[in-house]
Structure formats: C-alpha cells, structure tokens
Length: 359
Image (cartoon, rainbow, N blue to C red; front, side, top):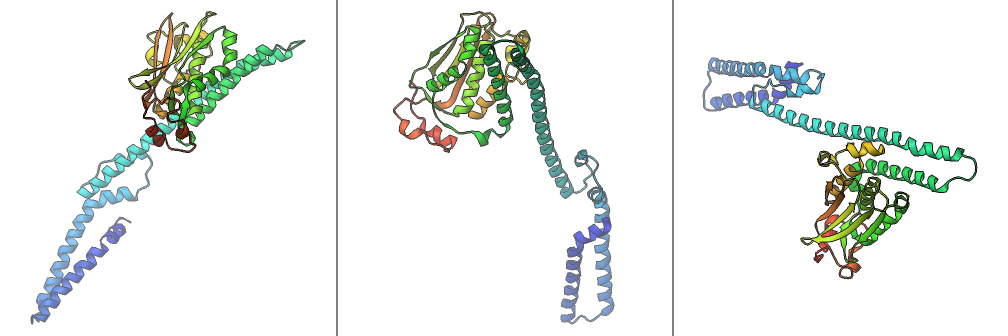
C-alpha cells in the first residue's frame, strides 16, 4: 500500500523524466549523433539515477506514508512528530492546528453541556419545594389560601424563566432584536411583574428614572436581567420596610442603570465570584433557594448585548448592581422617536442612530 501510494504520487514525475530523456536523445539524433551504445548507456544511467533518487525519497517518506495509511486510534496521533521533510513538517503543523481547534470546540461543548446538566439538576431540586407547598395547600380542608398559592406559582414561573433563558443563551444571536427602549417604561413593567414579591417581603421599590433615557438594547433580555436584580434585591432583604432603589443616571455621556437594595450585603470574600456560574456563597446558604445562576446569566446577557455589568456591596448595608450601556449614547424622548423603533434592524444600525448626549 505504501509503495502503491508512492507510485501514484510520483507517476507524473516518472513520465516527465522519461519524456525528457527521449527528447534529449531525439535532439542528438537530429544533430547527426547515431551511436546506439552511447544512447543506451545514457538512458540506463539516467534511469538508475532517477530510481536511486525515488528510492531515497521513498525511504525518507516511509514513516509518513505509514502514518497516513494506519487507522488512528486516538486524536493525539495528530501530535506525533515524525516528519523529515519541510513539506511533511508543514502538514504536521497544519494537523496540529486543526487538533487544537477541535479540542477547543470539544471543551466548549463539554462545558456547555455540563453547565446545562448541573443547572437542570439544581433547578429540578429547587422546583420540588414550591410544588410540595402547592400540593399541601390543595390537601387542606376549606378555602384555598390563594395568596400562598400565587406566591408558589410565581416562584415556579421565575424558575421556568431562568431555565428557558439559560437554554436560549447558546443561540442568543438568533433571538436578539436591538431596538430603542425607554428605560422608565421597561423598569416599570418589570417592577409591576414582581409586585407580589415586593408585597410578600414587605419591601418597596423606589423608581427614579427620567423619561428622557432611551437606550438601544433588547427589551426581552433586559427585562430578564432587571428581573434578576430585583429578585436578588428582595430575596436578600430580610428586614421589613426596606426599599429597593432603581435609578438611571448619566455617566460621562453614557447611561447607567443601578438597582440598589438595603439588604444584608455580600461578604467581601464572595464578591469577586458572584457572577460565576453556580456560585451561591454565604448568602445562598442562608436562603437555601439560590442556584448561583442569576447574576451569571445576567452578566452573560449584558456581555452579549454590549453592556457592562458591575456589582458592589457592603455587608450589612446593601448591594448595588449596575448596567452601563457601554458605547451607547442616551437619546432624549422626541428627538429620534419617530425613526428609531423598527423591527428587524441590525444592532449597528440602531446604535449609529443613538448619537444624542444623555445630558
């Protein structure tokens, strides 16, 4: 097989060399040279030289052919270094480059699969609690406590939203639609959706957002992000009568959205890791309901939308989570309102229109 492959590779070379020898003999014959012995001697010498060259080349490429014709048993075979010619070395470098790309893709796929599996396991475990509560409520005699039932249903809905967003994160670009969004309207909608959460925990939202603040973003994904901020703010505020402050400011010509609570705060040792997947920390162990995915998903979404998310906290004082609409200039209501909301436009086209200062 190796010899056959070698012959196939060098067949054109052999034919070319034969034509060259015959052509030279023809030139000598036309020039009047008629000595047959010399012609035969020249042909034999040329043939021996060509065969010697090809034999040496075959010996040099033998290991390379053996590698190509063998059945690989593991991907690491691509990392073997047995090339002897510049061409073979270049081929090996190319294969090693492909192997590295393959490894990176496999590791990314494995990490995503592991993250999905771990998240689903935690999510299923946590969903057992509200389901058990609902089941107990249904088993009670008399009228059903609708308020308690609604609270557990809301917990289930928030859990479903989290798992759906986690599943869609891998195909984010296909589901993204950038448009001009009024932050006050968006925040008000999110707060309204979480009003029962505020009422249950006796925590009150304070919205301080001017009508003028409009940013290019995806409304659906940002509603989820803000919802995560509000859920965490309320969940980790254990004292009644506290407030969650939601405000928007102009920072160096860019729009900054902040959600500040008056809760227990995050320990300084946990703060650098709060946006990592599945990190619950000390506070998560206190509530027993944390998946460690809320801030991770929010940070991933902000990154994909081109926004910058930041978390600062002081234990016993509270936590502030902010989103800077990075490289986006805020626009004032009425200046571009007739032209900025259009379905299906690209991210860049919308951002180019946002050229008015937020001051």
